[in-house]
Each structure stands twice: as structure tokens, then as C-alpha cells.
Length: 117
Image 1: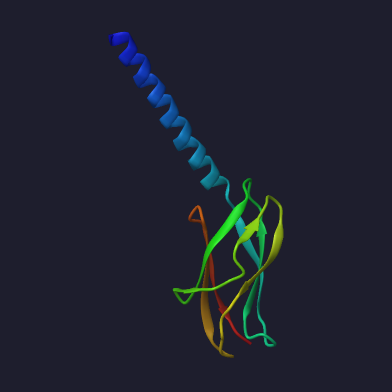
Image 2: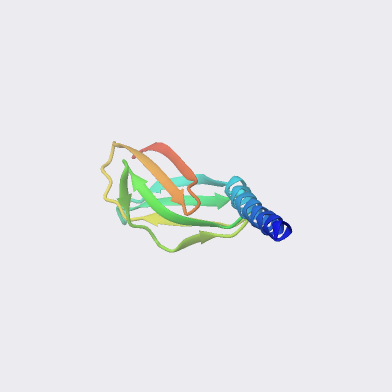
């Protein structure tokens, strides 16, 4: 009986270790950068050019401007090595400073301050 309990405990510990390290490896392998950001005069929106430089695909789960959630072209996914424009619906004002924060579903933040023309 004791042998069965010991084997079951080791199986549970092995499974837990695998799940924890897999999740940690994926979070640490996620890298995304903002290559360019445009305040689009014709649409009044903000266009962000993102590049995935990590080892896993990324999925953008939220975009925040000045700490307020904004709508964007969702779903927005980038495979490894991919790059594309993320279009954010936002009526910006010329000559203003904005804090832009892009969040992935794994919790990675790409953020910065950008001044409008």
C-alpha cells in the first residue's frame, strides 16, 4: 500500500513540475517589440507596428492608452518572426503625450510614451 502511495505521489509531482516549467518557459520565451507607432491623421487612430522576436507565438489580449482599455483589430496574433500593424481605435489630440501599453495573453507588457505631431 505504501508503495502505491509513493508511486502516485511521484507521478503527481512529475506532472506538476512539467506543467510549471512549460508555462515558465513559454512566458520567458515571449518577446515582442514596437518597431513603429503612427498617429494616423486620416483615420484619427493609432497604428502600432509590432514584431515578434521571441520563441513562441503571441496573442495581444489588450491595448491601454493612458491606462484605459481601447478597442483594436482583434484577434491580433503574431507567429514567431512575424510582424504586422496593430490598429487601435482612439481619437488623439495633436501635441499631446500618450502612454501606450500593449498586453499579451501571457501577461507581457510592451509600453512607452509617445507624443503626437
